[in-house]
Image (cartoon, rainbow, N blue to C red; front, top):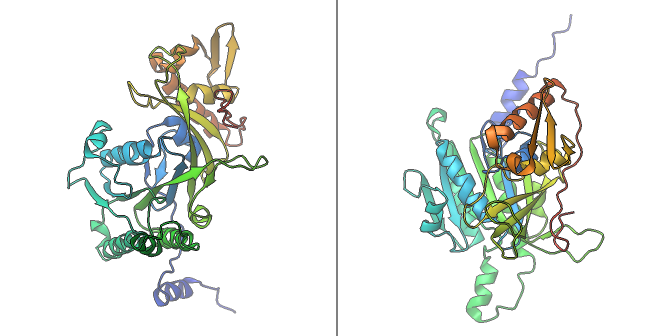
Length: 363
């Protein structure tokens, strides 16, 4: 009688004999909120999960679209609140300590290592050395770590530096930077797959001139885009509202238009808008009302909106009362929504599409 086939010997042998190979699955165990329940859900399918450790995530957008606000502000603060150590790599010389303090970030050495690095080779070497020393630690002693690079777009190659020093600043780098970025991200993707380290990077983008593909073009080549697990495209829109939500002629903040270009945890290509008023900062509930309305979960009746809970009860309120989360209504809606998905995993809702001003619509 033949012995039953066993893979155990092969599994142990291959993982020991070939460096860089590991067996099994490494689904994210730790998630860090972006500070926006709506953005969290569009990324992960959960209102309380945003950026995962053990993966590479990228926020790409034009200048002023709130990339740094979310990456170096909200995500770093929320990571620190969870006891996660942060390595913040500033390539733009733009992350002032006073600004980070305003966003609630703890800049003490016990909570953060802040580095200013301009060369892409130096960033790659720094991260490589850290991960190597991290893996040499006993597993029980390894802390959870978030590495934030703000931003990839400002990193220089040795060719850039040589051209600058020789006065030939107009010359290109012959695609060296795109290849270096791709190599950086691809190597990090594999090296953090089975440890509690996450990489969150920001990147620049510019407006597409292709009428058939209007999505913003992310600079730096497509290699790192393919390698990342999560990619969010961000666009800066004007917020012309006062504190009560009334329309104004003056600009009182930013409407950050977001589009989930890539995710493995929810349906991609969904869009939303998050309001960030200058006078108050971002409300974590911003965008939720539009999200629920776009999913046909709110029924308009006159000037009010009706929501029907899973248990059959209903609530009827004005839009502004929903948006202000009066009586914790949005918390109740989020919990009910997740319960509905739990009861019926195959439930389908329409795609979120939120329109902005006539000349600034997120399609």
